[in-house]
Length: 319
Image (cartoon, rainbow, N blue to C red; front, side):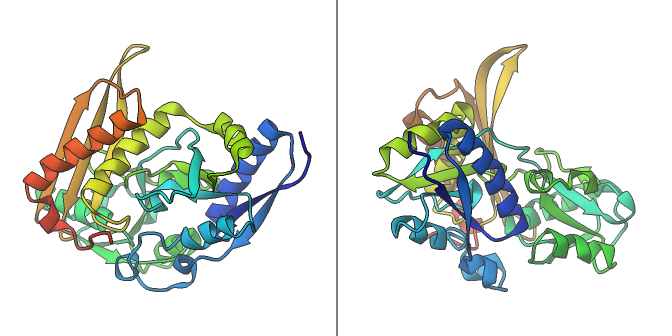
């Protein structure tokens, strides 16, 4: 096998560099080839607008995909939740590695738990999905909180808490774990309270469809269950015609009896950002054995949600 260096395209953020570095090490192990990180700036990195305003779909991945198609990099690493649900014919997701913790977490002042936040607490998040579910939970449990739209990297967001501007911020557990800052979490949000974004915690390793040797090598890093789970989640998102910044949460997980996996459960929620209207459903069945089976599971649950009025609750519809 050639020892030519492989070029990995990555966003420049600390989180993107950390997760791409971890993938680079794994790819180097399975290929025996050195891997070089190529930093690429995306529109989502430079825009200061809220994701819902700029149309979050694809804003973090388009520049990386352009670099792939131009041959400037050999493969790219994405946070899978940032990928548009429609896959280009000339690109392929060669691997979806084992998923990190998909939950959302709170980083709050004075090490407070979510339910211990004081009356009038201000909670920062840039996600309409998180706003919708936090506000719905607060309304149903008599909590007095205000969700505040924010943007920025992890340091910026946690800085709002350290400075006293906000009482708490909501972040993804996976991101904090990958940059070694999991010890700053003050509370994990149960998925019964806040369902994560479809694909949250998972990575996508993408390359051009014609690079058969690289596709085969990267496939060594693929985790079959993670791929099936995120395929079901993203199929639901696509069937709802919702973009990655729409207020949609979804999670597919295994139901086991001891060590024996019995079924897969897919849960999903759509809601208005003020939490006043929500559609939340789930379905449970045999673990899909194929990509098509996972796609069908997502579409079926989406159809039920649309029948209950989910379309009218989403502020953004994918193009």
